[in-house]
Image (tube, rainbow, N blue to C red):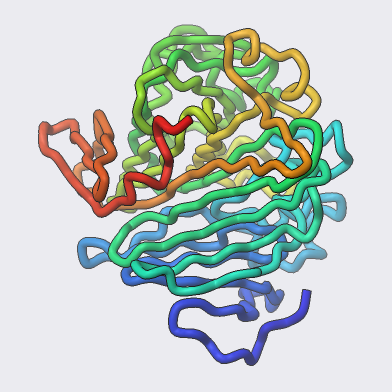
Length: 388
């Protein structure tokens, strides 16, 4: 990747070299609109930072791994680049194991370089298009990032152009909470854990495996009884993974995290017809091996996807397909497959997430637990809810 150090910084976008505390250079692309900016680590396509000005405050909803400022040689040699540079949000294609086409964990989009092919003002904000240097199942992969002036949201679209076969996909948005928080979700059919926990060490997982429940606030727990998936508590070290299957409710799929210490509300939205599941990765100090070393705490992965665990499982028979849930996109020469996601944040003092979220043409309306209603500027057409 060529270095962009020394290039003139543009008013609303820039390509530059960023140095961490370790002195490691990172090729980064940053684009801004009024009140919002996003930076991308071009080496792996991760969203390295998202900053939102709202209510007189600067909100930073995305997580950054604690080892990012450490020299690469201090990390395990066989660590995938996507883990070594873990930050923000990234595209998984496939999700989890790459056991159809050879690639690292979560595929080449999460582990290899992207190029900026377009960056320009778009009337009410800024629009940029990035392209993955590698192909995935013969497809060209592009990432659209759009910012609107005054909107506290990043609008993302991914496109697979051409190719053949089937590919599972997921976003991998991550936020972190210094003192935990409360979670809320759009209506779900059910939640389910896989056959085995991420960390099979006794005491390092909170949920039962495998298990299933209709109420996220009363999910079967490993120790018996139930666990509340809507309460992210910091008083126990654990790693857990659970899949939420979207109900047929006709609106956007959404996840809301009311972060206690940060005094904000992180929002992630999707079109359920495109991404019918939301996989929650609850990473709260339950991994002792490098580079985690027990320090990866308070992290919540909000992984909206069309996937089972692993590429082969996603394109073959799996439990989600048996529930009528699609787990991959079909690619075709001359075809174009697209899907969208929105990430944003609002200031919040009461540490209670909304009970419902509705999209209007030009704003997002949140009904709060205390009976109040909050609204924020929003592009209601972006997710294409209800389109064929």
